[in-house]
Length: 125
Image 1 (cartoon, one colour):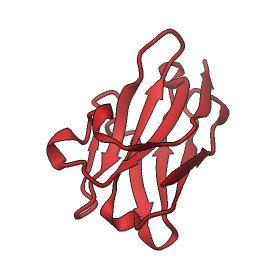
Image 2 (tube, rainbow, N blue to C red):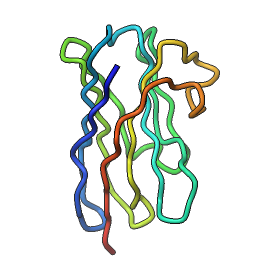
Image 3 (cartoon, rainbow, N blue to C red):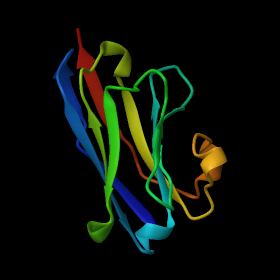
């Protein structure tokens, strides 16, 4: 399974971006997909995830209400729509996928088997 993240860039606070993650190599439907981010000098953290069964989603408290994860199973793409961006959202964003991720560990990085290369999002104040 290969993941290719794209869509990052430089925006001002309050603006929006949509990140894309193209998944290839395996049946997309059977995989949970997630987005994580790593800010400079910080550990990588969970942002959002969509489970493999019914597409139900979970979000980090810091992005809830502003970010939306959704997937196009027919095209093997998962998106992260980011609205009302803040300077503290600045980070490298990574997409991840895994066939064994369950509802209970959607937020856990170690549950994901496959990772993309990351795309940089910079939000200026």
